[in-house]
Image (cartoon, rainbow, N blue to C red; front, side):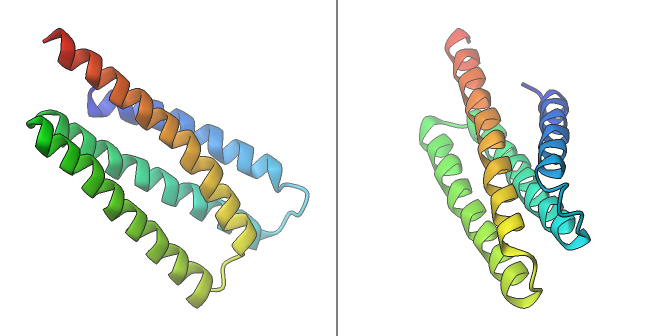
Amino acid sequence: MSFWAYLKKSLLLLSLCLLMGGAAFARWNSEEIRNAIALGVAIAYANAVVGFVFLNWGIKQSQHIFFLSIYGGMIFRFLLIFSLLFILIGALQINQVALVLSLIAAYFLFLALEIYQVYKFSHTRKES
């Protein structure tokens, strides 16, 4: 799958995440919560795009390099997410519940897209 095809699918999923997050927390009508939801979804989206970059680069390499890019990228992304959470919750006092719940929900949706991406790459690799 090309980057543009992935970008279309991920933006569609991003829109879905923002709609679900907005609907879930609409009853509080607080700008602080809306900002925390948007930050959580944005972090998950950035994580997904970085994951696609690692995956797309690694799939063109040998199997050893492919697994290094997958696992190295995973470790890099986890460290980046936890660092951002530490800064946002600790230093900036962002609403913890809204941030973490929106991040987890969006993360798993984007993870499903990433797994689908690996599945598509594996079939492309077997055919060639």
